[in-house]
Amino acid sequence: MVKPTIEPPVMKEKLLLFILAVVQFSHILDFMIIMPLGSQFMRIFDISPRQFSLIVSAYAGSAFVMGLFSAMFIDRFDRKQVLFYTYIGFTIGTLACAIAPSYLVFLAARSITGAFGGILGALVLSIIGDTIPLKRRASAMGLVMTAFSVASVIGVPAGIYLAAKFSWRAPFLAVGAIAFVLTFFIFFFMPPLRKHLESGLVQRNPFRVMGNIFGDANQRLALFFTVILMLGHFTIIPFIAPYMQLNIGFSDYQVTYIYLIGGLLTVFLLPFFGRLADRHGHAKVFTIASLFALFSIFAITNLPTVPMALALCATSSFFVVASGRNVPAMTMVTSVVKPESRGSFMSVRASVQEMALALSSLFAGLIITENGDGSLANYQYVGYIAIIMSIVAIAVAWRLKLVDS
Image (tube, rainbow, N blue to C red; front, side, top):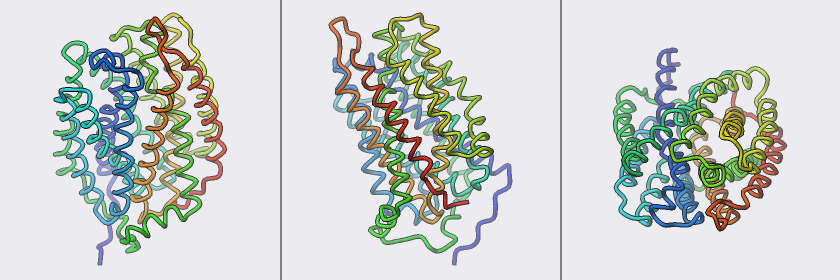
């Protein structure tokens, strides 16, 4: 018989959220740093935009496969143990990226990192869903998701500086070092996380686990929502930095302004989006943020040669509203399933998200071409697709049913 879990005190809850935020920071930074270094990878490895998009897709495709596999077993174990061993794998993969001698080896290393990085995202969301009541879950989600902003404000600019000062390997060495240290924090300071085991209803048959997920219409809708949201979000992201460099005229150092300013804004505003969602409704806040995102997507993907300040206004607005709508979106998705099945569902959702991410990146890579002067062409068509998908996501969000309170 499983002993009941005692509600953690406020200080332990804050420590837990802090650790989860740092986990998010490290694996998001590991993923994000690829984008602003896109022009460098294309130059150093002598690859095309399509081959660059494959670097992003390799990470996502590996995460997709591993997420589906882990979904069949992940709810059987203490979430702390799963997080600890998964994070070790992520650390090894990141360090392998840093020492890769060629493009193909780097692709393989990204696949290893993606296999564990995708599970980390699902675990973080599952732990928040298990430990934080729905009535204040969006606020906690907003705090943890500021890791994206901190990665943008501190991590990406620092990574770009390290790459420009030393080599492209330096950012991956730095992330690997951070991850190595954090494994000790997870082991010594994170409490056992067995709340989802208390009901005794965890399904142990891996085929029934998957059947329960795909047999539930509400969970299928949440997975569809994930795909549509990614198509409305990530189709444009991998090429924002290359477009600003090759078409607008940003230098390798000036690209840091995109992430610095956008990240600073979201550091302050993401918790605000969380409080708004808890107070006024998740679907409502998601809708309003998504409507503003439509204008930002159009502005970025149709931007002519303009002064840097105007270009930064467009990119920063996208950072704020696109990240802001993800706070209520992720809160809704974690709440369509009961705790005893949340880890499995979130792993499948992570796989579906990575599949959509890979398709988004590949799709954008197929549409975007190079002009004779080296600038990028057809970016506006990618933006139109993202706008359509964002509108569909709004309609789907209102049909989700939250079953966990």
